[in-house]
Image 1 (cartoon, helix red, strand yellow):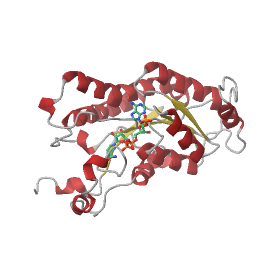
Image 2 (image 1 turned 180 degrees about the vertical axis):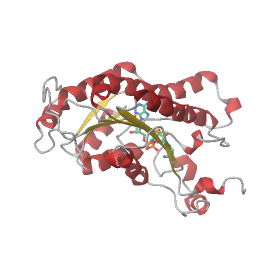
Image 3 (image 1 turned 90 degrees about the vertical axis):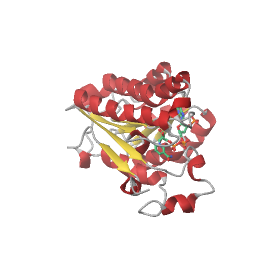
Length: 274
Ligand SMILES: NC(=O)c1ccc[n+]([C@@H]2O[C@H](COP(=O)([O-])OP(=O)(O)OC[C@H]3O[C@@H](n4cnc5c(N)ncnc54)[C@H](OP(=O)(O)O)[C@@H]3O)[C@@H](O)[C@H]2O)c1
């Protein structure tokens, strides 16, 4: 259940009319607050919708301020947005600061922002590009987790969910560089889970192909054929991941930490039969 904690500084520090309105919003005072990075579309937007629907207040992030504003408008009065690059430490600090100023707490952190500019064999990926992917996919999550920990979670508790991938669980033919970073994210999940317990539970999700813009090149034009290789005979949609994240950020998962929940329509069951 929600722990009802009075807002310490309801509207203090709010920088926009929208934030001020969010801080004053009646009916959700004391409700849990979540930050979802990369929440302007795809899986992150799906997660934000699910958390808003269950009663949380949600801050979404993304680089494109216009798209982010559209997402916030769709999510409604219990949402706010802070535009910026997830891997920029100044942006990480700004998100935490503005959430604390508007809502006075930060219960759940969903590290969803991620990228993969390095398709192809790992041996052909430039080290500088791999370092960039690592920065976005791993260091962002680390930075946000540190920020949420010191601003709220160390003292008051909460959860972190990192959005990894099945590419982080083993070798893949053309996502090798990405897979290395998603594997690191799983290790980061375990390490933080061990260090942040018992106050904070830290888990990861590892989806297979989920129909978003990011995954378009993996299935567009071939969806039927690719889905036929999944035991559950379809590709994922953002809501499939969102419901798992909602579970991992709820009291229903209160004895689960350091785990990676695979959400893959069963596709890994077929590994090795090819
Ligand atoms: N879709 C899949 O099949 C799949 C499978 C496994 C794991 N994942 C993981 O799921 C996560 C979300 O992917 P998705 O498929 O939902 O992608 P998507 O539809 O492309 O959405 C990505 C979201 O992240 C934001 N974003 C991207 N790079 C960012 C950055 N550097 N800083 C801040 N925000 C950033 C995007 O907004 P802006 O472009 O405006 O910044 C957008 O809101 C990623 O971590 C991805 O690796 C996806």
